[in-house]
Image (cartoon, rainbow, N blue to C red; front, side, top):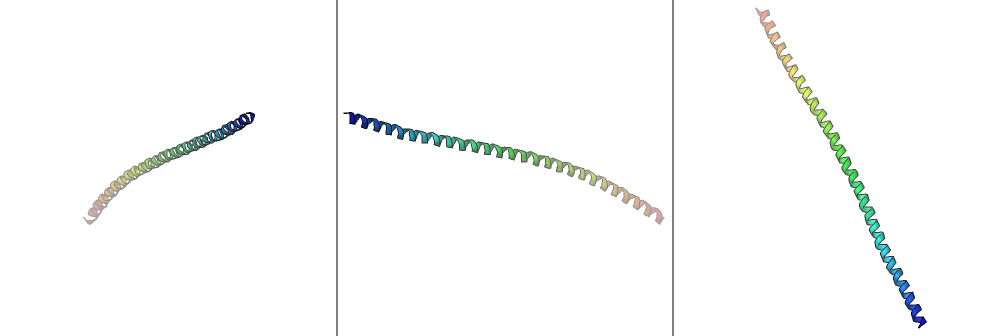
Length: 99
């Protein structure tokens, strides 16, 4: 009888040990999954921030270029006006010389 009891205790201890192993393994897998998920979230947040920063920089560059284009457009208009006025002066002067 005592042998059976010892045998049952050994079996119960082994069952608890194996069960503990699998529970621990599940817990370890769950922790590994959670850690990987957290690392993914950190990487994703970093990528999102980088994209946002790049978009802001591109918008700043675009705005600066648009301002330069507008300034150059105004300068071209001024030069065209000056050119037109100079042509008119030259035409007047050549008409006066021919008279």
